[in-house]
Length: 291
Length: 231
Image 1 (spheres, chains in turn green, cyan):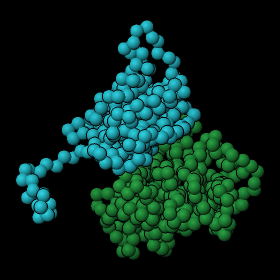
Image 2 (cartoon, chains in turn blue, purple):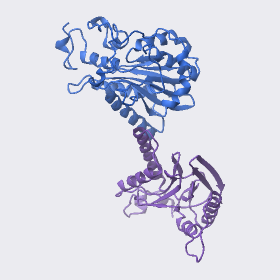
Image 3 (cartoon, helix red, strand yellow):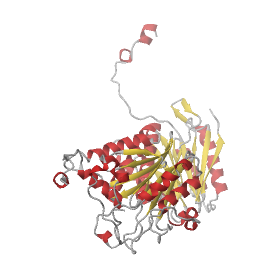
Image 4 (cartoon, chains in turn orange, red):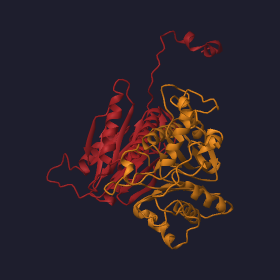
């Protein structure tokens, strides 16, 4: 409605008490391809769908190692994600150098949150246009954390972000009770099934478009790409999909703009109205490099 | 001396200007020998200061990558800090390059890092040993400010004067007439290292207690301990 007057600067409140720039930044996360994180009592797993901007290009890396016990998967502006990753890496390095210990996830999230918040309160900055899923293992066990451009961060049992991620979240909610006692292999399988549910019916997970990261008790971080992913994808395409995204890319409902009632900016990420139409392969060159 | 004098503060007993010297010599000796497809790097395990022994079980060889190791001796505070900074640099490299640093790259990095401190040096004698990109063993010898030499064998540290001539003669065939040095094998390298340290421990108070010998090949690393005299 009157959104347009109050959405030019992140330092301007709307009469409804919202920062529209921050909410717009969260839309960027939904443009990126899906990524899923799950944890059990002993392991934390991330899987991500890699996107290639054209047939000629390589699939964009989605999962970045931060330290031997932490990996992060990105959805949104890749360049912003790299800045945050570099920050997290230096924080972890400094902890090793000065304190001879691994940085615990909760401490790291506090620092990342503080850094991201600055960009939501300065007139000369813009919010980070990327959502992160962190998987880590520290003295308190395995963790999955989600961050938003709003600088909020959430400690999760399981989470999915990115394009069509609602289907993945539905799978995760249905199987939530099973994750705690899952083995390492079962956990990865759950994450892959959730990720698969975000794909249209005619697309499958392959070793080209899928990345896996695992970390856990007695196990340093491993990230699998290309051929290393094969053992985990074995037999997955035989399994039936439950509640797949389905539908063609053409006829999409227009994304509802007046989600003024969607509540505080913090939760707009998860449950807004119909998800925005996925960008067709040809458009991707024009828009910002979100992956 | 009377009791009053013994308990008075330093400045009353010794009126000369006191000077803070930032370095300490904690001893330690290292040796590295390279072969066609392996390299052996060893150090003694004594940490000392003057006539005092701090530890009989402190190895001076640090692992850097799966194919590279470094032996450092001298001022132990500087050894630890140099190693910590180097480990951080290696991690940063692998994050950016998605790969471990090669032995030659680590060698150059160490040289640069040492020279950055040209005007307040790391009081550390270094030897770097590793497998190069062609699979051959290689040894790099450093001085405290980063002068670097690529070699096939080297010694450094407290007993360098005793051990280096022995290696020059036995491996390099130096100072002898009509003698060809033998082809280097793991058995020969191990035997030379063992004998060199045993001889050095006899004559140098800063060397002794034990030897830690590491062998690196492209397939991995192994470690061996040997006891030395503890006097």
